[in-house]
Length: 442
Image (cartoon, rainbow, N blue to C red; front, side, top):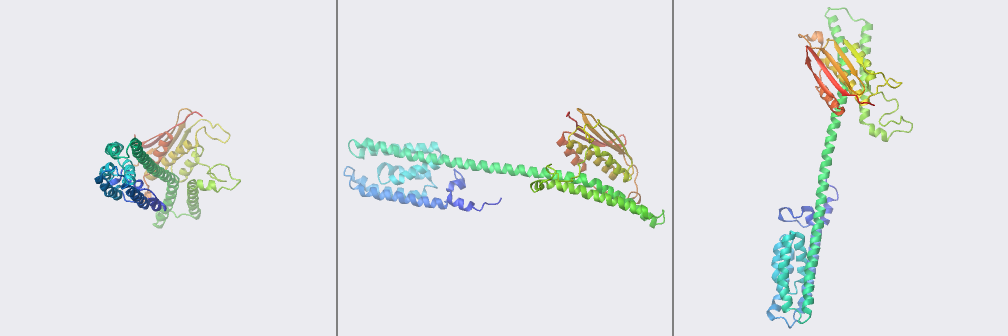
């Protein structure tokens, strides 16, 4: 994962708990630069309070001498304990109970300790320690505090003092926990987004592979058949086993190969255009077709009206194809069928895949193509051919046409998207490919 350039600076400016988690992982938080600045300032504040109250300690004749003697060292120890409060917040708070119960100079350090207690200790435990502090401090205030009527005022001040810093620490803890929760939600959302993005990319790759296979496998197989026939005739002529090819036959075969190669390049261009259609939409000049993803002069997409062309191409390649079509009459003036273009294209690809597979795996066998359908029912595509019998030599069939084995897988994926079904396999001595697609009412 790429680190944002400002993340190092952010770690310096944030409290250590916001980078390590609250409660801290492993029980210890590494101080950030901000933490060091805050610790120094709070220590200076506590020492200044200690020094100011230390000067006033001797001006309190109503305090016992032993209590006056204990006040400065206990207050100083409380100030020094502030450097340990991040690692041992509960221990520091408990150790400060005697100082809070017997001294005045501890008040600056005590404010930081109580705030730290509420910030870093679970609420229930922190509340119990707070009650312990109050229980230890109030007797000192009532028995050794300022005489006469000011005792209850001082007691109220001490109570408000504790509650103020404890509430402040609790609010800060809640805020930090909220920030950490929001950060965890953001990290989880980013992970979910990346996972969804990876799923989309995988789906896009499958769609591209499916389209490339459907477009190129048919054309390349036609090229292979024509080139194989030409090579076979040439080899037989060279071996003196057949009549030599005249110039017109060679020119005709070369023309067929060239035309199919051009057609393959054109269809490949269409696929690549689909992959770039978002960029072309952004950069499309004024005066285009107005159809997103379709520039001026774009080739029409395969549909049911072009099945005859597909069969004619197969016949021109030497396949024996019987084609039957029983579909409703077109509903518009251009001969279109009342069926979504995506469904028509899927049916076209099914016929194309069936013819290509027959050409690869059963060369020379007749193929039957039957397309039937009705509005409100379903569209059915059936392509079948006899199973190949015996073993033909390489001189008779040429080198077998290689395949990626992904055609039927890609066709099944298309059908799953459109809500159709696919069945294929040997049946009564024939290999049958059967596709069913829904044909909803307009």
